Amino acid sequence: MTLLRVVCHQLAPRIGDTHYNRTLTERSIRAAASLNAQVIVLPELVQSGYMFTDLEEAHEASETRDGPTLSLWKSLAQALGIIIVAGFCERLSAGRVANSAALVEPSGRLTVYRKAHLWDREKLIFTAGDAPPPVVDTAVGRIGMMICYDLELPEWVRLAALAEADLLCAPVNWPDGPRPVGERPAEIVRVQANAAVNRMFIAACDRYGEERGVNWVGGSVIVDADGYPLAGAASQPMEQQWVADLPLAQARNKSISDHNHVHRDRRPGLY
Amino acid sequence: MTLLRVVCHQLAPRIGDTHYNRTLTERSIRAAASLNAQVIVLPELVQSGYMFTDLEEAHEASETRDGPTLSLWKSLAQALGIIIVAGFCERLSAGRVANSAALVEPSGRLTVYRKAHLWDREKLIFTAGDAPPPVVDTAVGRIGMMICYDLELPEWVRLAALAEADLLCAPVNWPDGPRPVGERPAEIVRVQANAAVNRMFIAACDRYGEERGVNWVGGSVIVDADGYPLAGAASQPMEQQWVADLPLAQARNKSISDHNHVHRDRRPGLY
Image (tube, rainbow over all chains, first blue to last red; front, side, top):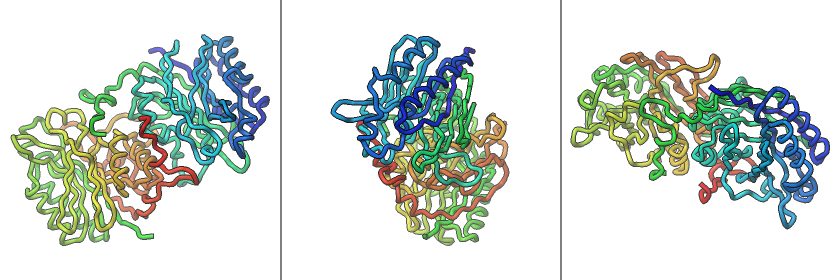
């Protein structure tokens, strides 16, 4: 079975320092390519940092789809033959910004997704997206995309799965919080369940590095179509480069018994 | 905060031996009551056993809502002041049967749910239910009910949560299968995620005891509104009596940040 090599590179961007962040992503993308990875996933808002005070500060760090970071990612994707999925602060019209993710292919095609479910103070800063999570038919498989808190809405994940994503890539910034000793972070548990009920691979790339008093789970994880982790899956808030080889075709087989199919067993008329 | 004491009693019913199974449930219910439990959850089809060869055999083991097992449960609920949630093979009209669960209150009120999402060969035997999971406003809180594979449809769990269940009780029979060493069974992971994304307590009661070549996870679990286990949560296929005291009011607070509410954050127009 053909394997797809995916990297999640857990990084620590610096708030507002877009030059530093751009350099950081270039280093990660080149490192993934040197491992022959076909897909790299980077954190949410890796281009800008996360803990903005207000819209004005976020707008200052934002860029358009032709901006320097996205231009760099496009050139790296083309030069290195790698698909890049990463978060950025997208400059919209009329002074607005979106918490977006880019999927950049070696062909130069760019797909952008705007986070539809905003977390906490993001609601004061970002304009929420209204479009469903895209599923892109790439040369290496069908790749879906969403961002962080979107993953806590199983309906949203289902949309990507019903659109036949084999792999869902999710840039995230998971703020850390208390949990019982010995328990895997609930953020990771939800990723596992989302994968299992859809028989879809999921790669979620978290960040680390305290920012304005907030720390992060550092819980990047790559899970298989049964919902079990292939890489990552613990709170390890430090730089991490997780690599997994995915038998992506397994996501095309939604049968889980002689008589069950995770999608055809749905009864939409009742929901 | 008022605590609700819930017991999941993991048992091994015998296929077709309804007399034995009835006695088994009586022992468990009395044991739970002696611990001052207010709710007891027993496995799926605990009245009949699971691995029926065909409809004829299932029909023979089935009973109506006035049958001997449900009559026993009603009298025990009334005598002991305990709510009983347990699975039974329900005799329908025209020779059909349903994979059902009963919720019996001390008042004598009986609520029956028929499994809507059937697993594997159940599709050859049972008639699927068409009604949503009931949520019953009991004297001790709002209790929802569904059965086993229903839990793998996040849409179905969401219905119970949106109907304001504080606690979802799920009789299950989880057939055992392979999983990576050290990993918690995916069935339990899905229960955790269902609880977390809805901020709802869930008590899932599994069975043990090989039946016609099938073994079971033995993974009964009681999880809190954050999705973390309070009791159970491993594969322990033997008799288990799990007890947890639930701060049920936590399920009434769906806020997870200053600006987030797990249900109001949904965007149904987009799903």
